[in-house]
Length: 102
Image (cartoon, rainbow, N blue to C red; front, side):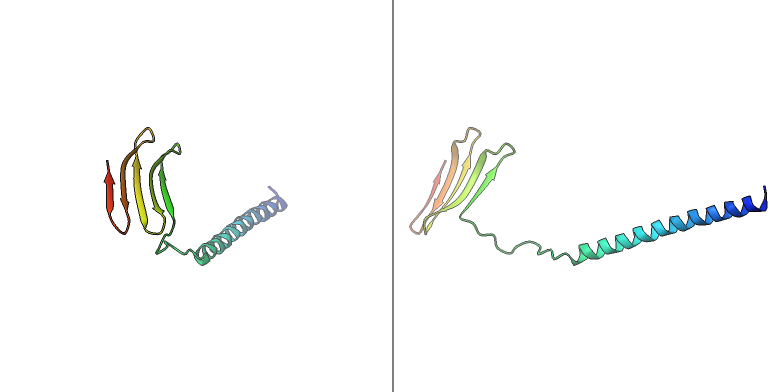
């Protein structure tokens, strides 16, 4: 092996190591940028109050299994439905009374 071949092999090895460190540095920089971006993302967390006039519980095929809703200014109703869509349990309340149907 001549001196030129040995020198060429050494230069190739140094270039390969330099490329490895450049890729590693770029990857590290991208990871740091990603970490700062995720940390800076404003995640509001869980809301303190959830407001709605009606809420539905549905199964995996989209069938309504329960409803909780308001009916007018002072009526509230909770209904649980059986397997065939028939109301099995109903609980209603207003200013004057509460009703439970089975």
